[in-house]
Amino acid sequence: MRRVTVKFTLRPVQSEILQNLKRFNVLVCHRRMGKTVLCIARLMQAALENKLNAPRYAYIAPLYRQAKQVAWDYVKMFAGSIPGATVNEAEFRCDLPNGARVQLFGADNYDALRGIYLDGVVMDEYAQMPPKAWSEVIRPALSDRTGWAIFIGTPKGKNQFWKLYYENGKQDDWYCGLYRASETGIVAEAELASARRDMTEDEYEQEYECSFAAALQGAYYGKLMATADREGRIGFVAHRPELPVHTAWDIGIGDDTAIWFFQQLGPEIAVIDYLQEAGQGLGYYAKQLSAKPYTYGTHYVPHDFRAREFGSGKSRQEQANSLGLSVKVVPQLRVDDGINAVRIILPRCRFDEKKTAYGLECLRQYRRAFDEKLNDFKQQPLHDWASHGADGFRTLAVGIKDQYVKAAPKWEAAQTFEEMFQHHIGHQKDNRI
Picture 1: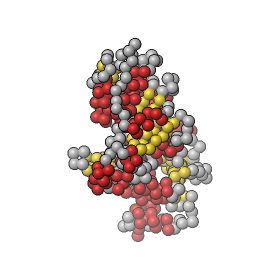
Picture 2: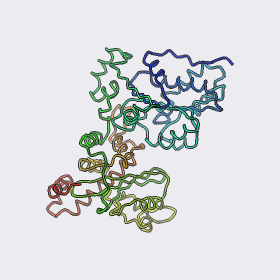
Picture 3: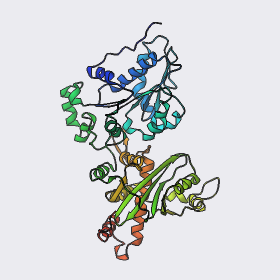
Picture 4: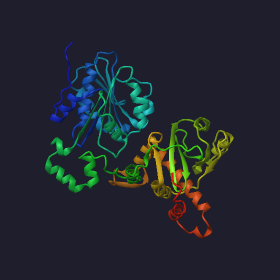
């Protein structure tokens, strides 16, 4: 059989990457380095060379429409040089003459990928994807064929992409590389100088110098979470059996339900656990809570818990009570007021890094939506995978706010929540976790 190759002129740094690739790879790359086209070429060549039956390869972007915009033209370009290759415009799929397939997907619907097998996958802009997309769906899909993975992107703060890069650098089957614009020589010096003038320092450091320390643009709690990390408030936080464990919820049926578990002692809040699942009813979550070794206090739930469901005619609050969950519905506030309440209490929070890992990513990634037409951030939050955990934490903050408001003496009624919170702290300085 005549050998077919994917024709692609490599830059020196791209050639270096190909020579260093292992089974798992994390490539932290500056903008305009050519990382996506390199990885599409790698997918196509691997698919052509695979001798197994019906090889399957995937390119995954944060959103399905992004996958089309970023990678589909490259797939068609390479397919055009392969005799017998066909492309399916409706499914963004390329079928090769040896039975192999390369297809584009979006991490915004990663559950749709459950059950498939993969020989290789590229996850582009992994920093913007739900962490569970890799751990629960894509990683298992690689197991039976010992498939490989490449994670690419630019930093978006210290999130799961950062963890992959820093935690796996010494693993034998991982290659982790970081490529700054100041070092690769791909982007001309004059262009870099111009970009530096036109961008904020954080933007430039993030996009061109691959800085994980730069703040995520539009993030509501990015700097507060960075401060928590710097101050050592994200680490191991022990559960105290003598204290009640409270929960704070964001409720979803089709969407995810997120639950934070926390304890209070004086002014500090110990966030000890986190649960997030999708497509489950209240009975499921009641069982999950009862299986944990906690003695519960208050279950804070959002205002829509009072709404009656069409089928049963019962409110979620009534259903929860019948399941033995004594819930407290928090007041309905404007989203901005709820976000402000979170900002006030975050400096008093400690997080268990392992048990709340997914929730922490939600708080770090929760950000304002971007208006591409106006080229500016909107006033409302972006609704994506990070919204559920962030909304649940907003329930926590509003619940605590309501607790202080009701407990405050009448002469404090005119004070803001922040003033009352600080007043409470002043009387509890010796009772910290």
